[in-house]
Image 1 (cartoon, rainbow, N blue to C red):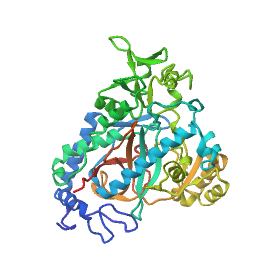
Image 2: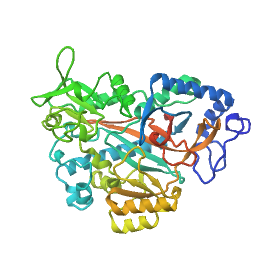
Image 3: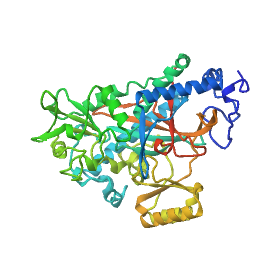
Length: 488
């Protein structure tokens, strides 16, 4: 089947300056996508419109939503999903998986060190001031030994493919990385809409995440516990990721609780049940550090559990991820990741960092202030794509405003070159056609006491606005099913 006969791709326009995931530099469909291209091309646009509506209904009926926080209100939205999947071949995935594990292990060793011996700071590999000035550094964690020696039980690594065809890490997320439920729901929705496509490809499953997560969480149980009782703690149904909290609890077969469902007695944590108190040993927490325990952190927190941190320090309960992990996903610390990997693992980084300027360094600050129009400016402690400024999209007035903000609080900002994220054919409702859209990939790595697991798929996020580089759902992004092919 030629490209001309392929109805739904007939109007697809390729920009030769961008790295297209399914077309090669000659404009031909890559071998790995050819069968998929032919199958989808056998449908008319109207067929695809109907299938797309079916997928949306599936998401709506399952309650697969997220919330966007605006200045005046909170909106609940269906998570946008594109039916045309992204394919990653086994050799490329091997690099991504090994690189994700390497970063997760290095970050865990880094966290242990900065809360214990602080060797990397004493050796001047990472500046002491960078850590002490981080809003996510917790003095209360100094000297605390997390059960199993793990801080970042769950890590989310955001990876892009640049126009040079190589993968680069944009950032590491190890506070409360979210999005894994959408990976699984994307696969389910695609199977319901177009089950036959899976007959032509040998893809790894993504539905084994919950069982692997539970297994690794159980491996870091407190000492003296034989069969640990695990729970997921959520801020509640109004949280933007509540669907994910409930989904993971259900699929792990554990209770979903709020702070009011737990209490601490004699430095042990208990859950209130109709049969009486039940001890809790492992808490997968989706609550930020400051809200965990009103006796230790924010006294106004109604989300946490009084006395929880004291129980944690005594080693009577495991918190995943550990409090204080956020210091390591500070985007300023990211600039030192190559050195951190070499320092702790004695290895070269498998995945490249994007060259990053940290504005607390005077020479780099000067460069950033003079070249804002060519850079992406990011706050070091924000998530969800909030606060990001893309220089070539700003007016002169907006550039001056960003320059002023950066000059006032340089520690709060990093800057990166405007990377050309790869593009992938994506169905756009408004034009009822396929168009190029930028994509990234979030991998999910789980560390246990003696083992690790990477979900063979990850979340491909799509910037649905034309030309936009920000893929976050909170900024209007969507997602695709991600197929990691098995080795033949």
